[in-house]
Length: 561
Image (cartoon, rainbow, N blue to C red; front, side):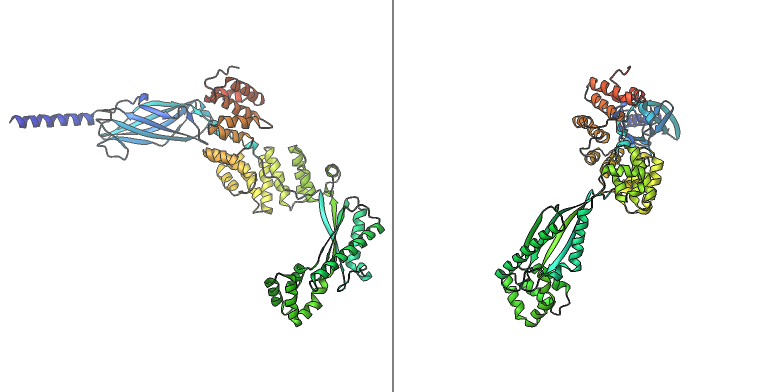
């Protein structure tokens, strides 16, 4: 009887405890239950992510309660909410994180919102809504974090370089003039009918014209003499060498007769047996047994054995003697002539007086010899008028308008370039840069990603990686370039020594350069570096003073100046 009473009392006690754990309301949460990583908050690319970790105390969570938590970042004039998270008592019917009434337990609340500049001075709160026993009630919000460091958003599109319009201009164009002098079998004398032939006469006239032209110079004359591969090697060597000597003497006398004194150097060489030329002529011929001849050449490498095998095929050899071998008894004379293009000064003057006097390659080249972007834009604009069907003129104009930050004008010019050259990757890159400048990130990603292989694409891709929070990829893509974006990637990778060196190596630092250097100073506890660089940044852009005062990178410094 005593045992039964005891069991009844124990059961009643358990019921009381269970009812108590279900009937009581959820108490107010406290800030000390939660920690936020990172604190202060920090952007990754264009978002503000964080992880809020909490520990719910024992006997805190009623078994039938469901708590919906909403992280909210609040600043003066606005707020942004992240996705809701649910946790619940062990008897509640929901899909949240289960918290033991008796022991309590951990909770994890992810946070992620798009960054807005106003978030620099902000506070992160948790809002709580409870459903218990079919009733809803709200608990006071709790502060769990503050501020947003937005260093990752300091990408600088203005320092990106557009792909230029490529000019094929060459100051000196090498031209070659040539003629052949044929010889009779086993002879080396130069016959009159050879030097009076059209081939040689045209060659000689070209040399005379080049010698007289003010923009041309004869850089050299070469004689190469040959013997056909019939006869002994010893005889052919002597014969080819004699043909070389006679041709060189003839050319030397011809140059003297024509009063051509400046011709570089007269060089010569000979080939005793022209098997290479023999094979080429056979391949191009219609000789009936040419495959058999070619197989002999392939099978036998020794010149005398080749000749013997061909002579064994008497019918074949007779055909060779008539069609092929006579063409291999010759001297080839080649003159190299330099055609000297307009000087830079001449092109500048011509552009000012008569731009149509410049060909497409010259006018595109002219745009590359000035560092003045406005002058470049003027040259490309004129180029689009003179050569509207060459995509390079429009691409160059678009590139310079991008550099001038005239993004609408750049977009229009590049659209015309795209029509003329739909598959040109340099145009895709430049359109991607304009999209990036206009904050059309998705469009920029497609265009820049499709411009792989264009040298300027790597830096643009690095900025996209920074926007996505892929710091290691950005460091790799930006490489050893000396620019703001490379330094920013190194700062985010916490390689402050590299960032400092990169910033010091920038040839034309702007306000952002100095601002980043100040951040490096703050992160390395170098107050002098902070103050010196902030002063330089504010000189160039006085709006950065207010930005710096709100920037938690500099929270430890007095910026009253």
